[in-house]
Length: 472
Image (cartoon, rainbow, N blue to C red; front, side, top):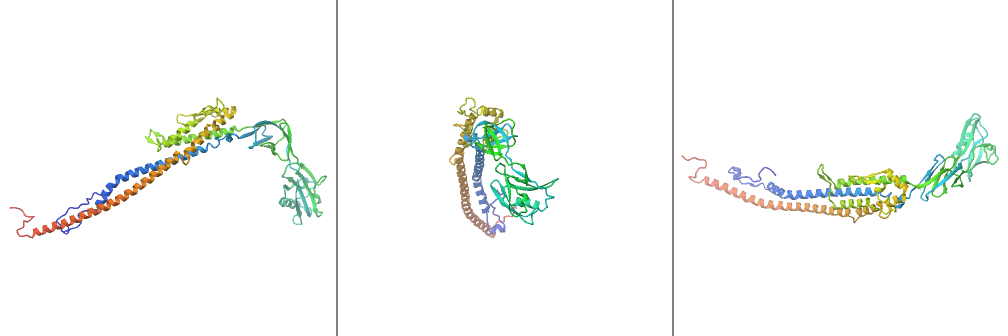
């Protein structure tokens, strides 16, 4: 409020005698309106700030619960515990991977030979890769696929022929190169396809200049560096052959990657994938601790700083906490009298509400009774499945958090409307006061003018006493 008075005192000066504004109407009205508006506006602003803070906190609560729920996806269904792993007792000889069709079991595996790809080397040694060989057309076949290569004067060298083979359209997998040794340069043809059926053959279909490079049954134009052969092995004593060292059809749901022959049988074990499950449970514990920290900040009280969380005592938060903790500490019918609570598999509660995980105890539980641990999370009343149901209800469109959010929106809208109404009321008050004080100001100005006139009139009367004289 201005320290300058909006009301002036009439004077006998010439300016006062002339009349004029006695009251600073605009200043007086502004101060009166501000005095009436301030307490109501302060209350509305305070309430609006509280609603804004709570709305932000509810958003954080929703985000924290949603993030925690995402950690349940790897634990809340039976299929989450249905993953298997394949382990080789001799990974140097073979490794294995499992698919959805794999089943539990242990098998003896013996490998007598690996699948190989044919490689042939030209018997004729040429002086160099640039030595001219001849012209014509070669038809090369790998397994059941053939392609042709035309050799002319521009590519009739040993190197040119190798390049033409490599770039030929329709080449199913024959790689050509020139290898130079002490005897000279040789054309080397290698198959990229393993298996006994993928042999190489070469015929000259036109011309006679390339006959030294043909190859077929009984041909002496090449020597065989590596023969095309199938892998030969047995699983559980049952013999099997494969054109590839990656075998997907010998054991249902299992891919074997053969790498070396064995002198003694190795074992293949298809078992529950406890490593993945342990990792998923560790992630669950970590996710819960993150949630617990968020809930403590939103709904707790810090005695050190005397600061309350924005949702302290809020029903939506306390309801969510209560239901989550009930699910965590429940005794679940797992079919086991030993492993039926989180504590029984090594998940315990700390004094601050966070969880700790004893990985050795969890590993022992999984290896001892995998089914019970699975049921503890996924069975009827299981921890993860129950938590998922709780969170779906809490975060649903008709759940308590959605209801709270809608209520806060309504409160904010009501406060906005109150603010608008206050502005309108103050505008009307300002207009009313301006009218009243303007009329008063006009009256006072008139009275001031009359007072000045009378003072001057009395001063001109005969024998009028002098206002400045003294009595002798």
